Amino acid sequence: MEQLNKNPRRDFLKTSAIVTGGLMLQPFSLPGAFAAGSDEIKIAVIGCGGRGTGAVFQAFDTGHNIKLVAMADAFRDRIDKSYEPIFNKYGKDKVDVPEERKFVGFEGYKEAIKLADVVILAAPPGFRPDHFEEAVRQGKQIFMEKPVAIDATGIRKVLAAAEEAKKKKLNVVVGLQRHYQENYRETIKRIHDGVVGDIIGGQVYWNDGGVWVNPRQPGQTEMEYQMRNWYYFNWLCGDHIVEQHVHNLDVANWVKNSYPVKAYGTGGRQVRTGKEYGEIFDHHSITFTYADGTVIFSECRHFPGATNRVDERFQGTKGNVYLSAGNHGMLTEWGGKEIYNHKRENNPNPYQVEHDELFDAIVKGEYKFADAENAAKSTMTAILGRYATYSGKEITWDEALNSTMDLMPEKLAWDAMPKVLPDEDGFYPYAIPGKTKVI
Ligand SMILES: NC(=O)c1ccc[n+]([C@@H]2O[C@H](COP(=O)([O-])OP(=O)(O)OC[C@H]3O[C@@H](n4cnc5c(N)ncnc54)[C@H](O)[C@@H]3O)[C@@H](O)[C@H]2O)c1
Image 1 (cartoon, rainbow, N blue to C red):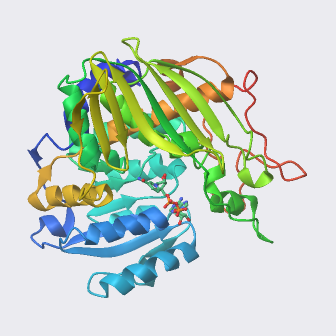
Image 2: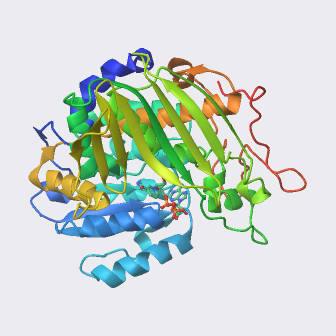
C-alpha cells in the first residue's frame, strides 16, 4: 500500500523516460525455449476478440520467428472466429493451436500463459488485473491492452504487479498506442522541450456515436448476457470514459508529465437510455486539476448523430497544441504563427509499431518497456473521472485510489450472479449524482 501515498507527479517524472518510448535499456534473459537457444518466440492470446486477433496479426507482422501456441477466451465461438483468419493468413507452420491448447472459460488464461514466451492480454478490462498479475507471476513478456482495470481495487493490483515486472525485467507494452505514434512522440517531445512554454490548460475529447449491442438470447444466464455485452457493465468495462477516453486522458498526463490531483464533473444518461445499454452513462464532462493548478477539461459522450470529436488541445504560456490520432501534431504561437506541423502522410501504424518495438527488444534480449505503471495511472485518471460524475462530488486522486469498492462478482461462473442485476422490466440501476457512493 505504500505506493498509494506517493506523489504521482514525482512518480511520473521518474518513469516518464520509460513510458514515452523505450529509453531505458537493460539486458535480460527470456524464460523457456527462446532462452535455451531456439529463435522461435511462442505467443498466447488471452481474449480472442477484435483486438486480441488484431494483436496476433501484428505480432506475426513484426517478421520475427513467432508461433501462436495457445488461445484462451471465455467463449468457444470467439476462439473459433479468431482462429480461422489467423490460420488462413499464417498457416500451420506459424499457428500451432490444437484442441488441447484452446482454453475456454474463466480460468483458461493460466494454462495458456504457461505455454508462451510472450502473452497478449486482450480480454475486457475487468479481468486485466488478474491476467496481468498471473503473466508477471509466470515471468512472461507482455503486451496488454488498455484500460488495465475498471476500479481502484484493480489498479492497486496492476501497480503492484508492475513493480514486480520491473524487478523481473519483463518488457510490458500497453496498447495506449499514441505512445507509439509518430505525431504524438514528435509533438510532445517539442512540448517537453518548452517550445510552447508551460502547459497551463487543455481540453481532451472522445465524442462519438457509441458501440455494439448483442441482444439477449433465449436461455442465456445473466452472467453470459453481461459477458456478451461487457461494454455496458462497469465490472467488465468501467464505462466508456475508462474504455475509450483513457486514450485522451493519458495524452493529457503525458503532456503534463503528471497525474491530476482531483476531479469534478457532470454526467448521465440522456440519449442512450434503453435496457440494452446496461448501467453506463452516455456522457461525462470533467475538470481535472493538476498539482501545479493546471485544469484539463475532459468530455466524452456517445450521442449518435451529434458532432464527433476525438482529439486533444492544450494551451501553453507561449502557444497552442493540437493533437489527434489522425496524425495531427500542431504547435502554434499565440496569434497563429506555425511552430511545428507534423506530416500527416506515411506515418507508421502505431498498432504495428508497438509490436515491432516490443518484439525487437525481446529478440535482442533487451529490457526496454515498462508501460504498466503509467497505464495504471492513466486508467486511474479515467476511473477518478467516473467516480466524480457518478457521485457528483469533487474527488481527490488519493481518495479515489484508496477506494476499496470492488465491482467484480464474488464468483466467476456461468450460473453465478454479477453484482448489478436488472429489475423485472429488464432495466439496470445506474448512478445518480448526489446519491451514489463511489468511495
Ligand atoms: N488500443 C486500442 O485502440 C483498442 C481498440 C479496441 C479495443 N481495445 C481494448 O482491447 C480489449 C478487448 O476489446 P475488443 O474490442 O477486442 O473486445 P471483444 O469483445 O471483441 O473481445 C474481447 C474478448 O475477450 C473475451 N473474454 C471475455 N472475458 C474473458 C476472460 N475472462 N478470459 C478470456 N477471454 C475473455 C470475450 O469473449 C471476447 O472474445 C479491451 O480492453 C478494449 O478496451 C483497445
